[in-house]
Image (cartoon, rainbow, N blue to C red; front, side):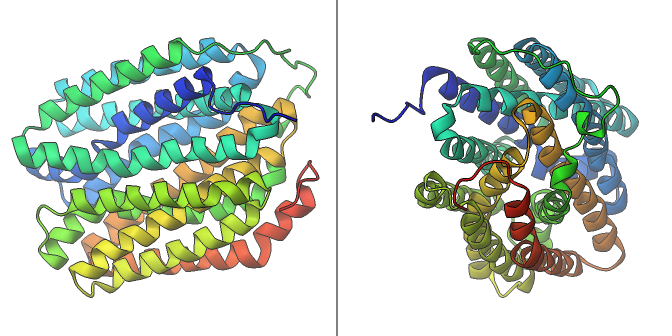
Length: 396
């Protein structure tokens, strides 16, 4: 029997719109600490508070976003959220005080959180059911690649132009491109389920996946520390002033190669096997990063973290979807993203606090320890938890 086509036009569009959504947001991420320091003379602790604002907003809106995309027209919800996300970039350009910047950054988390849930749920809708494992895996790669490539592009533009306003304008244009791409997606008709309990917690969070959520929080914390403080850490610890872009480029190469390698096992249903490989590789990467053995360990750690997250995140996304009912796809997506954002927020705050009062080295050793704890939890408990609760019978 001929296999259904995965890479149809709608899937390509959803992948591209998701890539542009994350790219526009994360092109600024590693440079905002430098911007806040240079523009407003903010200390490390204050930088952590300012940058964590969007995470708080995203955390508050994402559970409701899952409910919205499950109960209303997904395309309309996506378009509204994506448009507000695009408009918010104008706020960075006009923010003249640190208070205004904090308000804009925090408010931006609302459409970002909602749009990522809506777009990922739309992606599941346009993927053929027989290719869903692969489809979700590749979709997760679009997040990861954007989060890895965008910072390196942003850093390159900053070093070439020394112009933060230009970066804000680039992000604005990219967000507009993502909005236009998403608007052209055609969704299959679906029956909106309205018979769920009036105030069920499952409207807002996939309670069946609670242990998987704890695991994602730990991994998100590690990514939050690294992605936000890698530029300053490289400058202060290793004297690397223009190598952060290369760091993220190597990271993105690791993500891409890892996803290609993991594609076959995902197609065969070996989801937790991918997860185990991913968490172990990431643990090696974060440990190398914290060790500060030299520039070679700095760049090699990027490769290992990329290889690890390229297998871990798509596996975890599949796991969330597979423990959810078909009418809970939005909730499953919002749950993993909420958990990731909670971890990111904790990482940004904890990283800034530890760096301010101890050192960046201490912050990254704590990160390595948290990653190791997350890997241990996944191997010893989470994969068994998933296999007991999954709602399909495919091999894992």
